[in-house]
Image 1: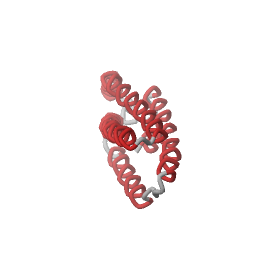
Image 2 (image 1 turned 90 degrees about the horizontal axis):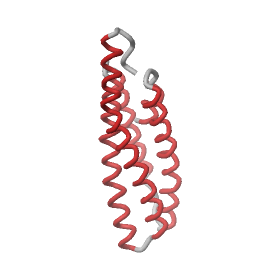
Image 3 (image 1 turned 180 degrees about the vertical axis):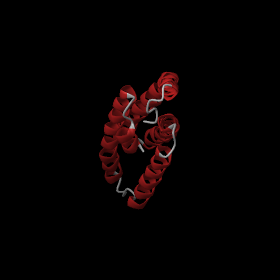
Image 4 (image 1 turned 90 degrees about the vertical axis):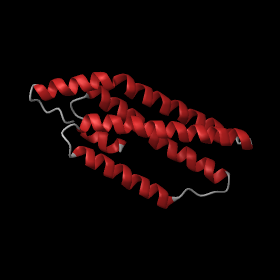
Amino acid sequence: MLRVQAERVVHYPKVKARIEQHLRETLGRQRLLDGCIDSLGGKSSGFKGAVGKAMAFGRGACDALRPDEVIRGAISTYAFGNRQVATYTLLVAAAKTVGDMETLRVCEQFLREEKAMTAWMLQHLPELTEEFLLRDAADFDAKG
């Protein structure tokens, strides 16, 4: 979803830059999480990852077909970010409970990153909405 947004958001440089930053953070997480899972003797689910990627791509593709693509993308990023906050909160609690300090450290980092992204998006939604509406009213390409 972030990858599609980063490619399509052209007219909103602040949003594009923040999405690209969060995409880099998110891609870095995969390696760290895989390391935590491996250290515990588990395996990450390739099938679940593929399904998740397909769903996120589908969401991004659907948003791209709409004239308010940038607004829908921002809402999706905010909503999915809050789901991630909940997931990492759960993982932090689980790691504390079982005494897995490395997973705890990694998940606390991810939790901070997700909280920062969702806070940023919420803070900038009014500005983005105003910019979108002004571009749309002036017959500029407001979509992305």
